[in-house]
Amino acid sequence: MSIFEIIQLAIILAVSIWMHEYAHAYVSYRLGDPTPKLQWRLTPNPLKHIDPIGFLMVFIAHFGRGKPVQINPLYYKNPRKWELMVALAGPATNFILAIIGILIILIYAKIMWWTPNDIFLNNTDLMISFRINFSFLNIALAIFNLIPIAPLDGYRLIKIRWHKWAEFMERYARFSVIFVILLVFLASPIFVKVVTFVFNFLFTIIGQVFY
Image (cartoon, rainbow, N blue to C red; front, side, top):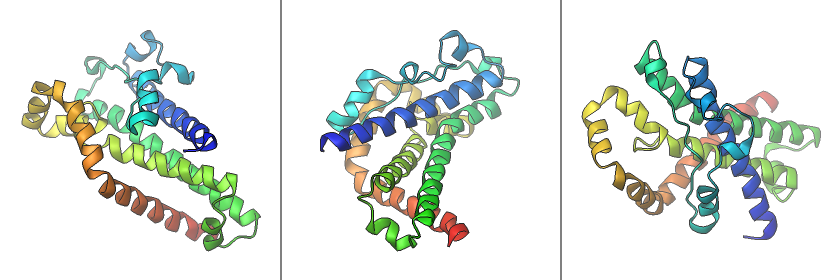
């Protein structure tokens, strides 16, 4: 990647990971769990939510992570339901960020009197390229985190309904990171196709409002 592309990717990931983890912390705190606040995670400061090593690994191995937010479901009045809400908060935030990015693209294109086809023909425009990458990467983060493998958010989803699978995952938790890395490298072409499909679907649906 060029220096510009590296800087662009760093900015997008910093914002996306920060908002993802902050969403977990905020929702858990609002549901009665003081743990995120006690651990200084209830802050808009992105440095509190980014794991430096995990962040650098994105550029080295194309695989990384943010600093996980610790929660304590014992504080919840409805532990199962509310833990699910906390788990979904991160991916939901990434989807919202992706939609905002697409909206900005379409508004900008409308101001420039572009058609939908012109948007991708002018993808060298800094405004367009940044927002396309921003939306695409946020969709990727959302979908990736919904994979039902610990320590991803999707694990909490199956933990509530499929206890045996959750117990199996917890028993072999030390190998889960290796499994996730292998999954990323082996299934990356399929993953990119899924993310592209979701991006095109959202772009088409939202684009109906403008064209």
